[in-house]
Image (cartoon, rainbow over all chains, first blue to last red; front, side, top):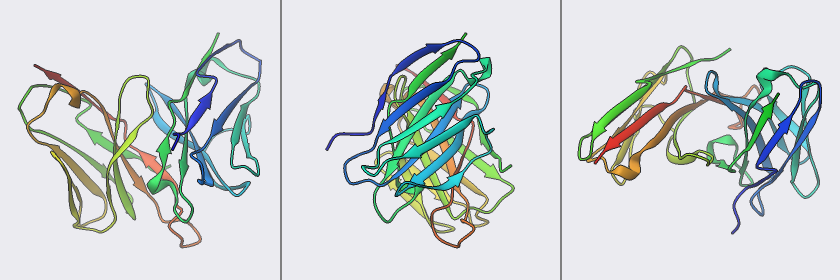
Length: 114
Length: 116
């Protein structure tokens, strides 16, 4: 079974731009969670989607948004990028009937904001 | 927000030594998880703990869910060079609806370096 895939793997943007990151979960998984990882703050939960609905949300500003499609693929969007948004963005998927305690992570998208 | 205190922040050990790291919280968690992250990869789940007092092993790794539900530790015995990486603890809070789908809070990570 293929693992969680994320595209693109690397991205460079400038302040004020917006960015969309994509995540394809493991086949059959319907829960997708997004995390931001930085050296200073560690891994921080952004949001979780299940069956196209946001099930949980972290403490990030409204510039961070996400959605999930009927095939369970998910996207997250960051608008009006700031320098502090530079981070590794990780996506994780979970099997049906479980939550984040059984999630599998993708390799991440490394975003650099200049 | 919820915080997990993970220690130590980093460890430098010789191959063959045992390693111990722990996480503490001011909150009670339903579940404790331990992950390892290699460079350029996402975290990989090592051990999941679901009950207070539970002690679980996975090869050379052993983890325990503290009886107060506010702490957990991970031990690695007889370390080898491929144990190098960042180890994270994570706690899962009860969700508002009483289901198991609470969100995870991660520790800051322990960077492990193993010298051959």
